[in-house]
Length: 117
Image (cartoon, rainbow, N blue to C red; front, top):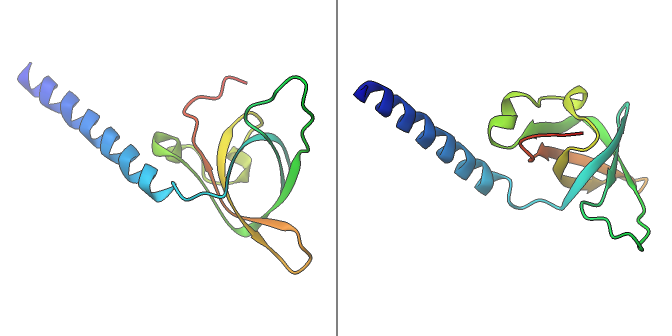
């Protein structure tokens, strides 16, 4: 019984430490958005909070081979590439602009633990 308590406490401490480290690593993002659609190497991003009377423009960003795609905390085990991104996921995004004035994604981090869409 004592061994079970020690193992449970150890697992909880590791998970909390993992989230604390990820929080500090991924806290300087450019924008928080929601994935509206994934089209090949293009992500269509929308705002998180939608007001009924407002109109919003979706932003399209390019994903390249250099783009780092991961998850926050335990989500890191399940998100590794663009095929793992689905509409409805909340993401933190870091941008870079190329010579053609297109937004190129440097890094995408999925930060919601569950996706109910």
